[in-house]
Image (tube, rainbow, N blue to C red; front, top):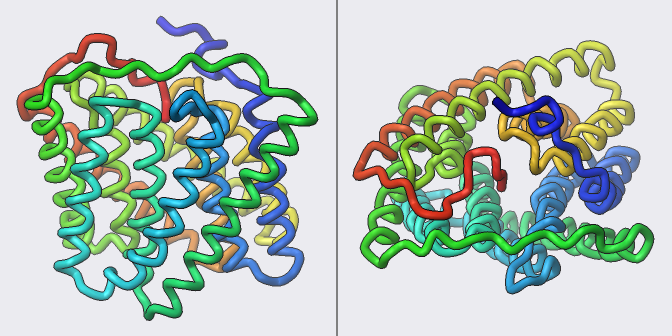
Length: 333
């Protein structure tokens, strides 16, 4: 039975490293009356900020830089490919398969690719012209660069912090890696199609949920799925309360989003449900700041989470395996 301190394990150093860059982009953009582009740039900074606790090639800067570059490229590519539904599905399956292969080799590289998939799915959801793709890519690149620079400044102020152990590899065989890659490609595609057929406006969230929840082991997938659903519900409730109290006043909402994002950065080693709640709350508040319809977003996000979680659980039943040295469900991305 996990103790309270483990459920809500908070790393202040991680939060302080990643909050300033995110706050600068979101609060600055809202203050300047540019909430929509600010939300895109801040969203990129939000993803990259988690990389401050990752180590790719034993280097946090590599983790954040690779994520930023990859997100920038797919922001452009996804905006263009999103105009063709068949190409969209094929590209989604390919990206998901690569993500499934990486989780069997290197958890931190898997995290980098996961951020790239998130940016790709978002870009697919907002198709446009080449110019639209360039605009989105510039915002993502700018948000990523500002976050990396801000983390660098904060490291100079508060130090590196404790060394984070390198992620362990599952040491899967080539056959096992291929199996999970195929399983991941199948799940992310089915989740997206199912969400679209169900009329979920933000169907990309179902695909993302399937990708995040799916693990090589059936038990880990089940636990992670339950925690994701619980965390999503909690995040929706918390965001709704904040929106009701602040009555959609931009600057206070931006401040609440910054605090919520800070919680997400700090809760990376808490139970996954706690992290998921903080992420959900942050995203909903950013949607509100960008002028999105919150009521529909709440319903969509919950339904998409249920669809993605169910698809991931079904996919994990295909030749499930408990990999030696595999991280538990509470070792979060």
